[in-house]
Amino acid sequence: MQEPLKPIYRTKMGVLYEGDSSLLLESKYFKPLKKKVNLIFTSPPFPLNKKKAYGNLTGQQYIEWLSDFGPIFRELLTPDGSLVIELGNAWEPGVPTMSLLSLEALIGLKKSSDFHLCQEFVWNNTTKLPSPAEWVTVRRIRVKDSFTKLWWLSPTTNPKADNRRVLKEYSPEMKALIKRKKYNSGIRPSEHRISKEGFLKDNSGAIPSNVISLPNTNSKDRYLCYCKQNGLKHHPARMPSDLAKFFIDFLTEPGDLILDPFGGSNVTGFVAEQCGRRWRSVEMDSTYAESSISRFESAWKVSRKNHNLGVDTK
Image 1 (cartoon, rainbow, N blue to C red):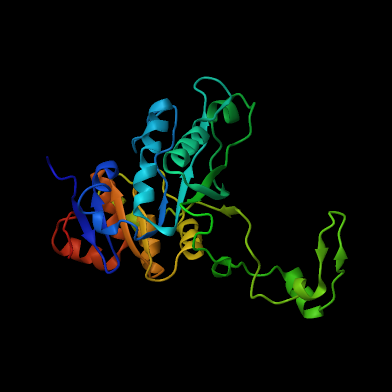
Image 2 (image 1 turned 45 degrees about the vertical axis):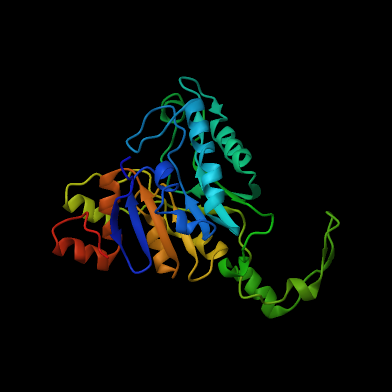
């Protein structure tokens, strides 16, 4: 049997492989990582009704495909590890109604591995173009679909997490309240009691919500410039690096191991390295895998020196 592994490049903290993650993650190369991965952070191809360049599946085939990864992911995760998976919305073909395919796939994944659902997150893409175009911009009978959900699952009900690592800057109003040290404490109509001491304590920042609003416009980053200069197709569904950073900071510590089985342009690996985490990424498309080396300056220089994008920089 032909081995599925093909290392594309290595950096100080990680390795990117080209191959089918359904085969690679169960191969002998990943056996040493069983029960050692602290976070699987990934965005698999969405269950769209039309085929895209990055190889999405549709219908029941998608549900079964994603469900099959559940036991594989659980076997790799530490007992207190986390799986964060982005699943986009799907629409029924030819009609202005939404599909439940993403939710069915999530349920299938959860049931196949007995994961616990820790929390759901919404990424509001503040710069997303109006879609689905037929119903939004042509017939004008729907509003634009501008968010995706990220689902946080774990083998345990109490995975490693600390929201103090992802605090947001206080608003000017909150800063003024803390400085003034005056607040209308007491019982609210909801019967929730707010104490003056607890509310006005300076905790160095505000706890973020599970709605994350981020733009996804970075047309001049190194990766896109590299693809353009070398006549390479770029990955069409890249996520903003700040989205990956939020979950990496929230759910891991420096030195932890992060895995992205659907690496794309390897945003996860790049952000993990910046945050001092070890990482492994897998991408099936050779062009996407090879061009992602441009995110890593040192590896890129080695690649350019050897005139070979696919060099394994050990």
